[in-house]
Length: 280
Image (tube, rainbow, N blue to C red):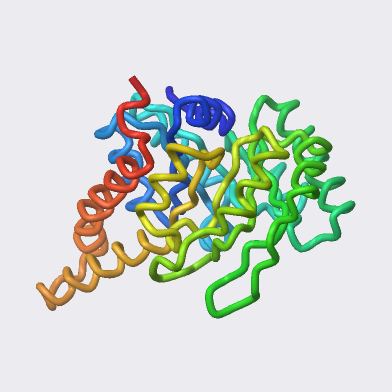
């Protein structure tokens, strides 16, 4: 079995000058494709179940599925609960077998975000798993605007919560369908100067490929969450399959055709972030 905690894959990434993708999973087919891509690339991988995925399928099923996928490959696999809304939701992930939980208190006042994140981190560490927190607020394309991370607040948050990874807002946006202008490097540099924990970029699909590679190799960013571009890959493969054979109706036969393109795209992402070959 190759289940790993977030700290167990991010600390080597930080030391080795690469980053590990947090692949946003929505079902069996994409999660399996990402595990297979990691195995082919000999790379560590983070499989994530966010709020939408957990609303669609129970957290216990996600936990069992991620465990089965970890057992099917020889590379480190992190089972990560993304954007947990409260202590109970994070505890449910822990009890379901997740090896990492993210508490998202980014919309709370600073003091309350620190208090609640620290509580989740203590619970996670007591159980031997990892915790990610967020300071600042990463907004949504065509939705709620971002609030950039204050470097001084980031330093205090990291010190007082004990998180294993710190998600920051430095020009990144959730659900961006194409690469934007890139991240705010001055703000990122100021955060790096005041913190020591691995940094996380949510909304990684909106970061240009060249900048993702550069930051993976030369910054404290050790995790890029990647979702939208992979959902686009899935949707394009699905439409192509249905257009090619208008009589096809079997769910398994249809969905199987998405796994090849997803595996290929996930492999490209792993190579771009320098994660390939890092799992021995």
